Image (cartoon, rainbow, N blue to C red):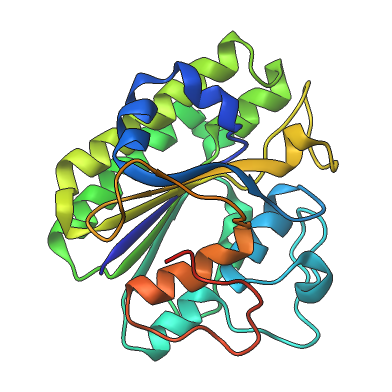
Length: 254
């Protein structure tokens, strides 16, 4: 089934308790509020792990600067392209460009959140994703929303500003699901959590992330356990009828 993967950067599970849109979706989803990310719990290493289904010690990116792989592993978009699937990515943090290799995606949209404002870019990317899905063949889309992480670093995790950013992200998520409906399966996930004004440690506040699976393939109101961020790519390939790469170490959730 066609799939949209939405990553809300720095989304802590406990932040969702006060977000009505999130609670509505969670009640209709298969979900966990206790999934784990990788060490270090830093944005780019976590996202590269998500797309390549291995830990940073294997893919080699351990900071927010991409490190070309010494022993390359095909990422999610490369695998899906090999099965004839059309992929698109939408992002407002420029380093996300490194999740895929050249010639593996059909479309990319980038707005510089730091320059334009992450509240603005999140809405524009949401508009672009919806418009693209309605106009072109799109089997898999990845949407990265960075406003929450930026706000956490500037003002602190779980404060008023952070919760306002979280509400904005979920307004965008709700709009995507409303506009595109049952044609897609939706996976909503974080790369890491955060504490005070930082993250990157092995503290539970940094390492624990939500994973929410919404749509026709998933059982409603089912809580699961034992999920890791490296399980996301195999789950997407299962949904799309593709085979995971032999080097991947995660396991499909479904």
